[in-house]
Amino acid sequence: RKEVEQDPGPFNVPEGATVAFNCTYSNSASQSFFWYRQDCRKEPKLLMSVYSSGNEDGRFTAQLNRASQYISLLIRDSKLSDSATYLCVVRFSGGYNKLIFGAGTRLAVHP
Amino acid sequence: ETGVTQTPRHLVMGMTNKKSLKCEQHLGHNAMYWYKQSAKKPLELMFVYNFKEQTENNSVPSRFSPECPNSSHLFLHLHTLQPEDSALYLCASSQDGTSGAYEQYFGPGTRLTVT
Image (tube, rainbow over all chains, first blue to last red; front, side):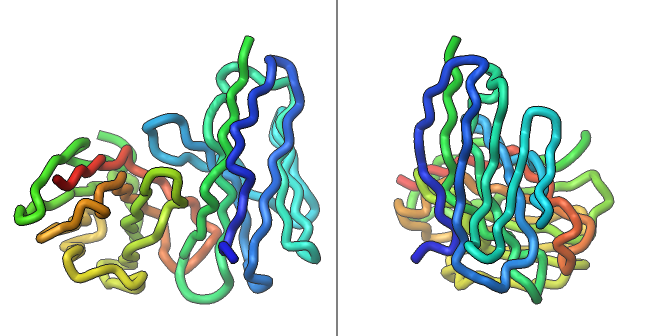
């Protein structure tokens, strides 16, 4: 089983749509959770951290379910500029700042 | 220069060549990382340096040799690579390599092709 699993997509949605991405992780000792965004042929950039109580940043909402080892990202009112690959990232407890990346979910927003 | 820079941005090398990738961070961070991103695969952590000391070697073949002369510079020396080593090599840095509280900032990557 992969350490971090995501639906690869692509998700093709029109502007203004709401889209949700899911992610599961295998290690129950995981400590920190993040969503990164990677544009085509660019480096990953932190989109938002994911907190146990859920958190929101503008049009983006992240949720964490530790019991199910499940993370989600909801994007409301999609913009063309949201087109990118969204990476689910987990940090296991202990040791160093070692991030485990999912393979990413590709989003394409069209006019 | 700001953030994390990497050179070269593109590299084509033969299997018998020796080359080096360079990473420099201008953020005052103490931890630096090498990642490999192959097509349709997740980013894989290769090495972690914290305060110039290697703290993680994620079972990387010896044909990849990292070097961290100071907290701002990180190199990846390459020799006798295989075609399957062709990938995007990303460098990252963070304030501290021991805490997940610190965001990792990535460089633009070096796209490596081994022929």
